Image 1: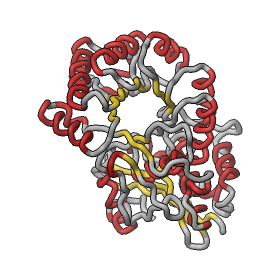
Image 2 (image 1 turned 90 degrees about the vertical axis):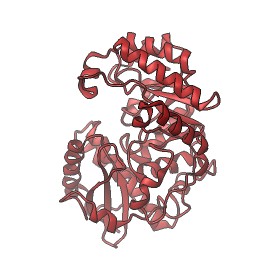
Image 3 (image 1 turned 60 degrees about the vertical axis):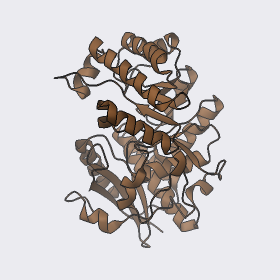
Image 4 (image 1 turned 180 degrees about the horizontal axis):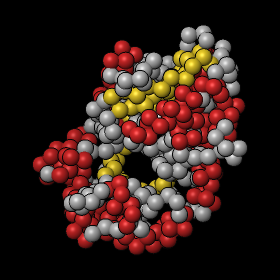
Length: 385
């Protein structure tokens, strides 16, 4: 069996914050395909990376898809002789996931069996409320109550509303501060979520890497007091491990990082510097199934729990879940909503996350079959098989 073609799929959807999902199909000369995913956070990035995928046909067509580790390094090192991060690791991630899916199909085994077998029967989840639902108290109560009633025992919010006339993607990251009005509103919101969720639900706070050091310390301390938070996620931008160390030294809440870190090498300073209590690599960005398993093993040696990030589609969820079924040091897997029915149109069979836990299909590969008719009907022009 040989790789015959790499096909990028951009599929429009109202289930994504960014209006589309970005999948990769690795086709073989024997008619069997494996599926991966990238789904970056902007349509521009999706199109740029899709162009790289198409170019990689020149590199990978004709390769044996069973040589997963070889293909990972061949792809990673093809950008520079040292390898690189960002778009490179995104591309590697999608191809790697697809190759594991394909290998499982060839052997007739689920991916988790290829990774050493299960250490648990299902995967505990945490989820998000709809951001728009938190803007009014009536809808906040309805949304948080629905999450608790669904069986989820942990949820995550970003309580910091954008200030009028400011861009969250530019102004917040440029200055790193938080206005007093914005900060007070965040405390009020977090306290209300805690009140509605009750004392037994874990509340996770996502700062999205936007704060400078003094702001991160101040708001974290206040959140500890008003909402008894379980973790403070990405308090500062990822470029400075020193800034992260300063925050960690001066707050009481657990620190979680990793969504913006790519490959095992960027996690080494986190582990060696004792900079985080949880790590949360994204399987579609950090290097795929192969890399997520390696990062999990590294974290296990430091007794740090794994909690993979998810901001994408159903392949993201399933790929992370397969690895976490085999990972002893596991906390929870992220999903963007407590109700995963938004993925149903993409799949021949829906995902099962009743009771706040994901039951991974016991079928070959990732265990899912993509609905190609739906995907073709909703594909962005020029990005369908």
